[in-house]
Image (cartoon, rainbow, N blue to C red; front, side, top):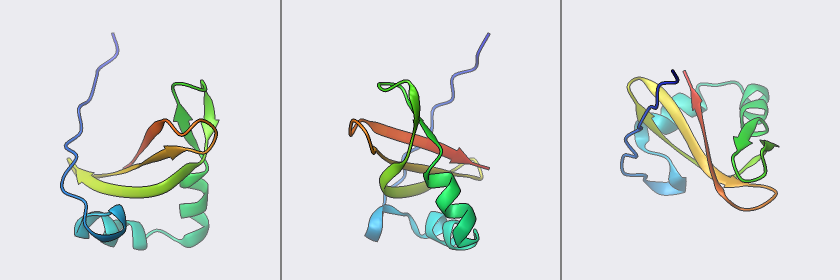
Length: 81
């Protein structure tokens, strides 16, 4: 059976990132950041999409990116551990 994870949203600061998430995000090479943003799943489109207006929080040691689907605008998220 699949395990459902609930992520703490934290309190985003400037540019949609908490300070800890911003530090983790900036530690990722720019080319890898592009790949991460371009590879999120949208439950509405049922397809891979790009995250627009990205922000992020830290939850249980993992960076959680949040934004909107480039196709339909629905909220999307991606966990980067």
